[in-house]
Length: 300
Image 1 (cartoon, rainbow, N blue to C red):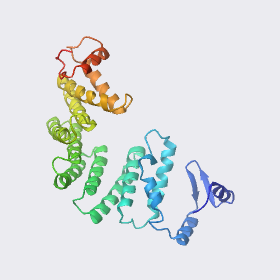
Image 2: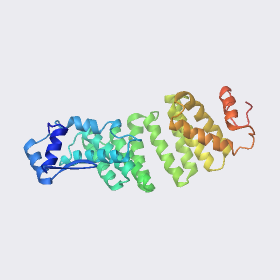
Image 3: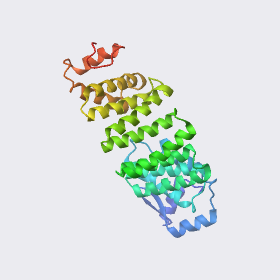
Image 4: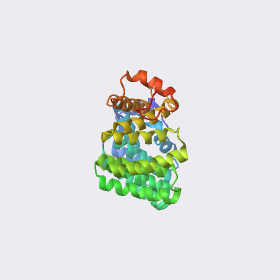
């Protein structure tokens, strides 16, 4: 509706709208009347759909009440269209809002409903072997993974992997991410051999396609380091953490959370490795200057 904030306040004063901490609401009969009179189409709402689908629409350190308010906005926009439009732009909105419900509200049933609707659009419009269809499978797998339903999660991860391998090839970053997701799942289950196998497949692709100094390669090193650390193999863990840290120290700013996480992992493992005796930060400064350093027993 073409109105500004003063118009909204005028309507609140006359009882047409109600205002609360989440924004403005109106009576359902008034909503239906406006819908019938305006006949808004998908094209009319394209600006809203694109805006609500942007990364900056909701971000990590946004106040929680503001996140809830914006999630409600996105929900309202989705609910406005019945049936769900078979449109890939609308499927992106469904994916984003599903992620919001999953990550910020812990509302897994609603998240699954939106993911499934997006998947139905992708399967029908794009086909069963499209990368966006694989993205839907992967997101549903991640949702089940978060809930501890490992069998369902693995099934969807494998569906995504099969598409990536067939359509994108065996040496594509998205294929590596599928291997990585499967590795994390096996890691969470305590199946360390399967986890290591999938982590190594992901790492081989990252090293070949993205290079030895890419943040995704560093992330893969870190995952393998955590796996060895969980098994008590601190020498191997330390080696992989150091490889990851050396990359991220160059690629990221000092306060980036990924760098901070790897720094923490490296320090914890350093303290469990008897070969070291000097303070960690002193050792780290010297080790970073030694390009040939690769193993805890190496001289620095």
